[in-house]
Image (cartoon, rainbow, N blue to C red; front, side):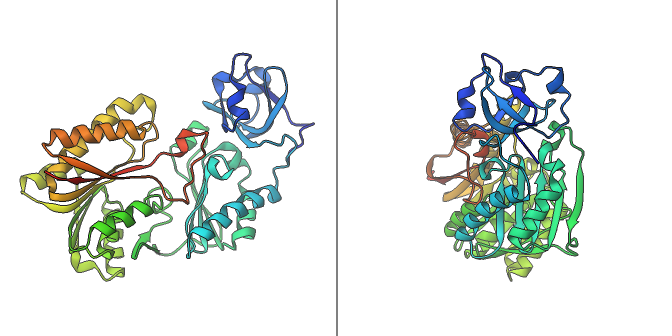
Length: 401
């Protein structure tokens, strides 16, 4: 599907930093490219050869001229052919890693740029794969990708979930369909950290379940034996169900989504933990304030909100929101108890996020020890040259006073 002799060429501006691309950065931004009439006319997702300002070929890229990320590196070999065999090789490498990490086929199979498939996220639920083609090139070549996935993994069902906000930046419409096989008739049970989670693959958030907090769930479960646990922004029971599996006496899950809490309750029942599990629907900030007014206390409190700072433009406002979460959550932690605060905002690095949490804890009149700084599980690898791929942070504190 590609031949360096027939593909169009796009070029970096003379003052653009070509070293970043040569040293592994996978993106060329629109303001770094010569966007002449010919380049602007390329259909979104077209393949091209990226050249430096001196017209030296650098990489085979996918081009979306109207996007801020105008070119995504697919292969350092400008003569590579982007066909089923190319996809299969990338997928096999990703699969080999996950099969070393996990005993059961429930994990993130492909983590976009870090697995060599820019803009493509694939989560595995047994024989079902949920694919998010968040870049135009992957949308154009989706059928080839799907065939390679079936061949390499043996999956029988492939769901295309193009409902993410990233697609609009590529000029792509929302789409949710079954590309191979049949849609699951009910939520899929997912075993993880001794708990069972119920994943709605056709109607849930993102791909249906967040695998990225797996390690932080496990760490919290180790703290939770005999504990009273509060899990805020719980989604389908992420931290709460892991804590119950770890021996917590009781867990309260708070979320604004009634369907998500229903899935959490189903997961608790599936794991035989329903009697120790409770849910409360409502705005997280309002519920935190209400619990404080009720004089509630918990041994373990976790707050895992959505991205409050999804971009640099939203950073200042997002950091204030993280500080507020910490300020409201800290008073609910019993003396000597544990508080885990999370962020999935790539714009808020761990230092800025940690400073916001520390301010919030301090404003609540509490003293703390930082016990652990957690990141996404190993099935969400980070590309060292791309800071955005390391988005998740989880800070666990012991509140000493």
